[in-house]
Length: 281
Image 1 (cartoon, one colour):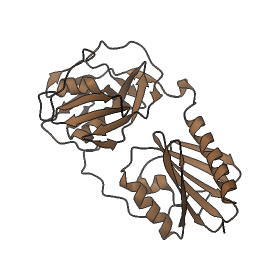
Image 2 (cartoon, one colour):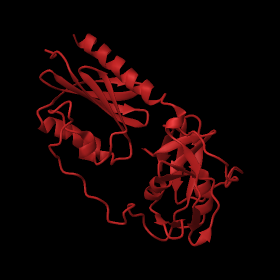
Image 3 (cartoon, helix red, strand yellow):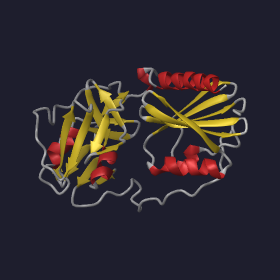
Image 4 (cartoon, one colour):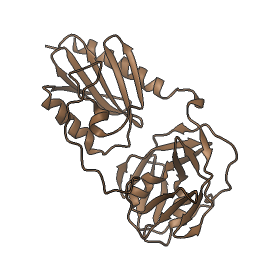
């Protein structure tokens, strides 16, 4: 029975993974950022894009511009580990590709899950590949290196200030961790809604069959929210059952009677997949 259930889960996860990575290119559009950019009060012409309301910049462009400031950082590509390595506090070493001319016209960005190591620790950023270059959400980089990113709507200007600390977009202090709450998924009234718990919206919802649904979330939430969510499952009488690997990522299975919940990473997405099925004895 366990082998059968594992096969079903793997098939379902394959469907979620493939459909989340094969959506039409027209679903998301990257538009060259029309806003001016000030870095410590000086105009800077970045090759940047606006995607779904957020501005995305090349890491090397940011590192080149911030080199010599309090928040400088180095960027290196490690071919052996297939990862981008960022080192805070180090001056940037140019490779000649920095601050290229702005591209004209809209582009079709492709979500990318390229590994990024910050001072040796793997981190998750929202990123897209546009014509061979990776573009990262400016606010994610500002938060990672703790420099200020402010939007001045009156002047249509993005203001980067390395002398000030990063603050959330609303300008308030960091939001405290959410407390466990009782909001559940509509289709599964016994399963806590991860999106409501972590304060993120559902990126995609896949109805796999009459008893299984996959909920995808972009990994922009607090990393500790996953551990807190597993605690919430246990508080709601779910019991850890087992784990397995899919696409190199660990997937965890929790169960309560005939209801199972599989959680884990798929590329750049965190997936919660409740499923009704026969109880495993």
